[in-house]
Amino acid sequence: MFDGPPKDVEGECNARLYLGDDWGDNRCTIRCKEAPEHEGPHRETFMRDDTPVVITWVKDERHKCAIHGQQPEDRCEACDEHFLKTEG
Image (cartoon, rainbow, N blue to C red; front, side, top):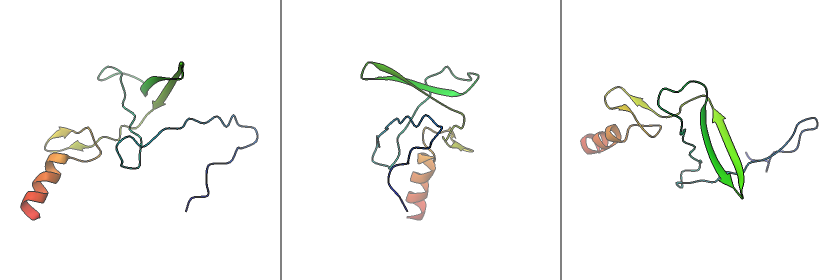
């Protein structure tokens, strides 16, 4: 499935940014720090070795639950807990 790190492509910059798994869920969480209802892409900035890093993206991967509204994750924990209590 995995063929190792991506190979350099001639004619492209090929710079890399290494991000880590922050919660043991095999992904790295990036959180927009812009004001609510901001215009333009989402953005996270941080410093690495005295060098600024800026990440921008468009899609918000949080879950919008019809019952509980916007959730911080890609699922609704309140619905998950209810399901486990009633079905489990």
